[in-house]
Length: 76
Image (cartoon, rainbow, N blue to C red; front, side, top):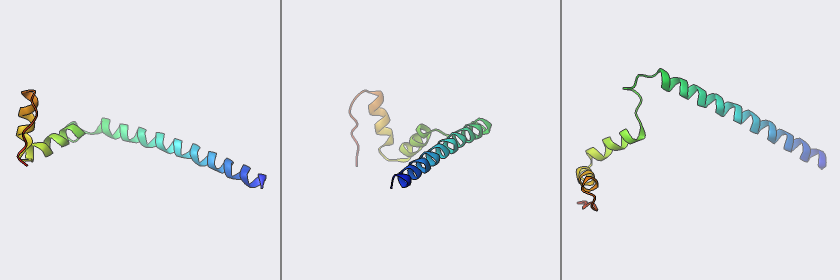
């Protein structure tokens, strides 16, 4: 029984080590792609949310309320 546990724990550690290497490689590849992409292609989450809220009927009210430092009065 002890041998099985040792083998299992050893295998677990090997898998975790491999996953960590693969995650680092994926992050490096993503960073490299972002650096190579033109700025017009790279969009942030904030930019995406701005587009969504601008298209929504309550979007202008949210921005206006924020700028006026008051609670928004959404229409529904």
